[in-house]
Amino acid sequence: MTGGPEPISAHARKGLERELADLRTEREAVAVTLRDGGDQPGDHADQADELERVTELNRLDLRIDEIHGRLAEAATAGAPRTDAVGVGTTVTVRFEDGTRTTVRIGEDAVVLDGTVVTVDSPLGGALLGHRAGDTVSYLTPEGPATAVVLSLGG
Image (cartoon, rainbow, N blue to C red; front, side):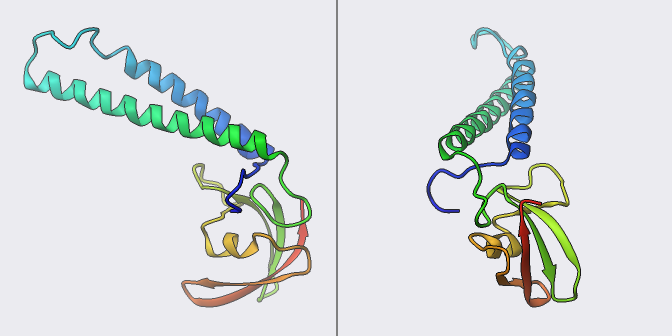
């Protein structure tokens, strides 16, 4: 990550927008279960349940705010880079054993998707800023590894 506004791919934007819609629906469902007033009598179990729902509502609000912020940042950043690997870039690489794979560089792996390599992963972090033809080195649990960037964008 550059420290400045980071772009996101159209695929990542759609995923965040889908998550945002789901979170809003979930938030509405939780919000309607909260009592209108906090002065209603109830036993400790009722109060504990109420506190759990408030905690869940706060968690949902934080994630909604986080997604709003990320979408706003991406709008400021513009389109993902096409000249070098960045967040949102699709990259084809060749590993030392000759196998080739195409991955997308993502910020996080919220959705289980085998084609997404996060920027925090050893390979994802190593690829950032590189261009086609570059060789990157990174550490795996098995030890040092290298990969050659074959192409960007497909």
